[in-house]
Length: 115
Length: 117
Image (tube, rainbow over all chains, first blue to last red; front, top):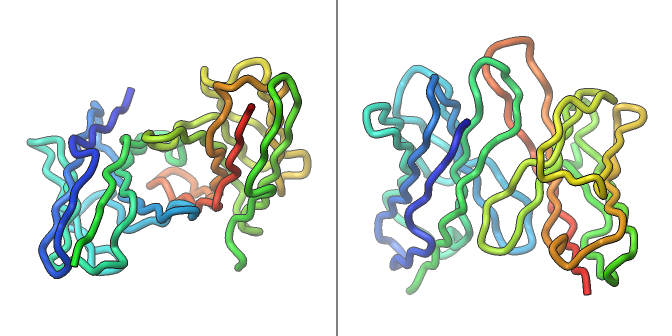
């Protein structure tokens, strides 16, 4: 069965600083990987996804993530954080063969942005 | 495209009462998912439908929980004899399935926050 670990529960960064949120997954086959963001009182919004091909994927709002099979990681990065990026970030993995299976989410990382 | 909507947004109930939540997916989406999210956790899968067929149920979905999608459009999630442990955010998501290939994006609604007193 798939699992996702987000080691950092809470991260605080200064506005304009770079950001990296960590995600490690466990899955025997090729994973499908996602990053979602959740603002207070809002549903989850997809930032980016990895299925195959180029291991560096670009997403919305200036985010990118890199798939590293050897490290079972899919870390999310942003070169310059904006105050509006403060939110909860979830990494998720989906199974390969059965297509649209339910996602397995990590516990999330809460991002705070300070001036 | 109005997105996924969920009603009500908040529900407060007393232990032992029954509650029902509704999810309206994006109109052309044939797959609909229910997840539960408790404080400090990521969403956990409960069940999902393709059209009106319920294809999978999590072991989290006890006998007190039932979900329907009678016409393959909106879905309802009912919890009978609520317990304090049922307090959570209940999220609905929808997607458009593709034959084989990659999983498509699941679009999430804003959720229904349930508080059981």
